[in-house]
Amino acid sequence: MTEKTKFVFITGGVVSSLGKGIAASSLGFLLKQRGLKIILQKYDPYLNVDPGTMSPFQHGEVFVTDDGAETDLDLGHYERFTDINLSQRSNVTTGQVYEAVINREREGGYLGGTVQVIPHITDEIKGRILKGAKGNGDVDVVITEIGGTSGDIEGLPFLEAVRQLQFELGEGNSLYIHLTLVPYIAAAREIKTKPTQHSVKGLREIGIQPDLLLCRSERPLSDEIKNKISLFCNVEKEAVIEALDSDSIYEVPLNLHKEGFDEIVVKKLRLECEPPMLDNWKEMTRKIRSPRSHVRIAICGKYVHLVDAYKSIVESFTHAGVANDVKVDIQWVNAEDVEEEGVESCLRGISGILIPGGFGERGIEGKIAAVRYARENNIPFLGICLGLQCAVIEYARSVCGLKAGSSEFDPDVEAPVIDLMLQQRNLKKMGGNMRLGSYPCRLKEGSLAERLYGIEEIDERHRHRWEVNNEYREILKENGLVFSGLSPEGDLVEMVELDSHPYFIASQFHPEFKSRPQKPHPLFDGLVKAAIQLSNASTKQDFQETSRK
Ligand code: GLN
Image 1 (tube, rainbow, N blue to C red):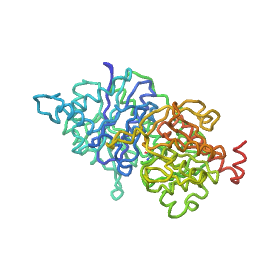
Image 2: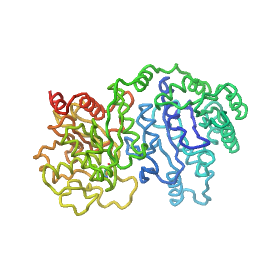
Image 3: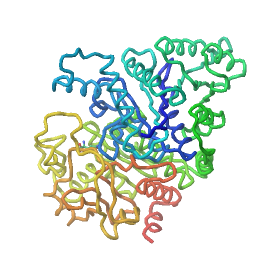
Image 4: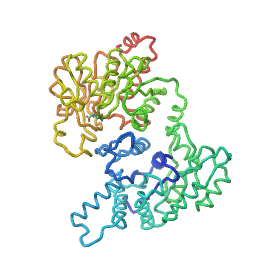
């Protein structure tokens, strides 16, 4: 943090799911493209210490940072839009804040004092916001998104903390952005500003006057509507920004820029900078809008009814699609349906199959059947984490003839080809103790993995407790499974692949966390390329021949 570091706070009102994360990411992107050094943070008002123990059904994907923090999926958007690798410090929850304060109280840190929400909890929050700006070189702007909806009881300490901060930081050093909904009421054929007025009124009651309003709307806002919002909410008209629905999240920063969003932010914060460089991003969104062709790839998993559960994977397909001028049409396949309806009826005609990470036994046999279908029919395949484990189990069963499984699902399995990692055996607590974050991996010379990455040593992010059991490595290898990625010491299997297949590869790590809009991940890029080849080939036979050449 420097003397000159500026702070932006983003809150949301009226309803949840308005896209605060995308708004924060868009601002981060636009400021970065203006040459400013930025950092993004998400403050979540729930009591969980982190989302690591929450079900994806509740919370969507758990995004993992390089330093092994299990974080809110908005951090994924932050990283993708800004291409900045964030850390633990960028996701703070009420649980973490209370944990720190209560621990300090037990250690005698407040001896003699009564520990209270104000000032102790709010001080801890302020401290973390300020700390977010430290240790990252000279940060010009810290963007802090407050989760939840203004008016929620649990969010109040955060709002009080940022209210105090504005006062302490002084004039021109901080800015409040409030994201709100301006609905169109079909029966009245009118756009309504009342929910926004009330939302802002609520903020003002607790001492926060927004400087800028981002108005989510299905319809363009007329001058008259903007004037009304401006007058009733006490926000200058030019700072009432229309945020129309858009087809792709990657269009949002461009639309907001057209509305003058970043211009007003830099003006109000008195930042000196250039106009943003947007040409490459524009070209990317043009490609997203008009792909040359389509390719269909199945994601066979457990949480397929909830797209948020696989957010980074979906985005990785968008990125790899752009790089190859195609739109990846994702076919969601529930692994349990594969068990009931048969693999053929669920996956017929598909050009690629991805098995994502996951926990628990449900749908496992369906996933293993999908791996077998991909392997036997030369369908491009990418397995991620649990997907790798399924691929190894399938190979051990079908090719090595073992009664194989994972001890995660059956502690008494005859051949536990996937077993609990040694370090994980005696852990009793559930949160934050998997193998988490970035670890190096050495790629086998001449392997598909090495060709895809173009380098020999990579770093990728992990989140798992089980691993390939080294006792079965020899027999799997003898039968043709290639261990193409290992930990530098050679004791952990990180990647497997098959020589005899056009594209069959799996990783114990999660490549999806490191895919970027303009830098698709090699494993996704490879899958999409192979899928295009397959869908272009008139027969699968053809494909096999062309891809071998
Ligand atoms: N459940 C498996 C494990 O803990 C896989 C985890 C994952 O896919 N992220 O090892």
